[in-house]
Image (cartoon, rainbow, N blue to C red; front, side, top):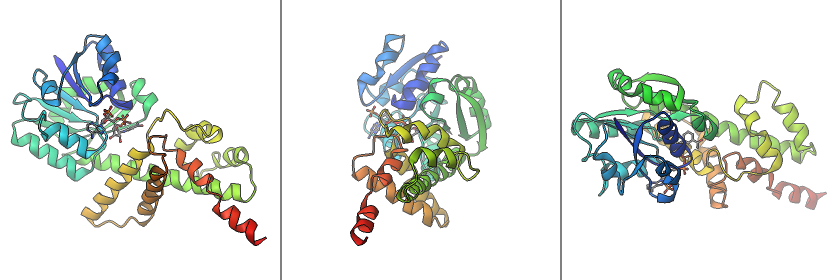
Length: 299
Ligand SMILES: NC(=O)c1ccc[n+]([C@@H]2O[C@H](COP(=O)([O-])OP(=O)(O)OC[C@H]3O[C@@H](n4cnc5c(N)ncnc54)[C@H](OP(=O)(O)O)[C@@H]3O)[C@@H](O)[C@H]2O)c1
């Protein structure tokens, strides 16, 4: 069975690599071709467009940056939806908003195709090690068709319910991730403004129940100030907070904290931090010396 894979960024390249390691023959496409190099060194076939990637596969995965990229790949001029054979399965692993995921499910159904929204939790290392968590929204029968493929890429597969529910769960998780990271960045900035050393703060804070467990994994980056070679680019976390805000608007939830956090990340993107790891928000708020300057001026 041939498998299609579109989107070979940080996550997609590693996920597709695991499918290849397990012996699956891949047909691959990415906007930027050079990222396909390692997979093409194996037995993967390069597809010149999303439509080309769809022409000979029964199951097609997408792992793209945002809903706009997914929509272009699926329904754009060279989109794959009209090229997949009837009865094929599209598994979208990209982080998108629930209403978009439902719409893609409907577009698929209208063409006699099956669709699962299966976003993931876990970053670059989990993707490389086949240890992602999949949140799968759609028909249980469709999940069974691709379960063994998901098991090559992840070690926990959760059927969240019908269409759009995988995206719902993923957006909820990342809303908490983004708001928590921003809150922690402010905590560090406050502590340092009070004269507390960063390593002392990290040593204490990361061992309090108030700190989320994922923050310990960011300690080295925060201490060294090295946010290059992102695990999860800051610009995609900001995108996820935006998708959370859109979802809240559509469903009548109020998210004042999240919207403020979202704009903090937007300022960081404006100041050139978009492609850095999202923990760069600590460096960003920590570098802000306005408070110190004001205090020094008045002392
Ligand atoms: N990194 C993580 O820790 C993590 C964890 C869970 C979920 N996710 C989600 O996984 C998805 C992929 O993220 P990533 O970390 O792999 O990011 P990435 O390295 O930036 O990869 C993004 C992918 O989307 C493609 N893309 C971006 N804009 C496009 C456009 N306008 N048209 C066509 N293709 C476009 C990129 O193509 P090019 O290579 O040509 O740029 C690349 O294949 C996102 O939805 C993200 O939120 C990421």
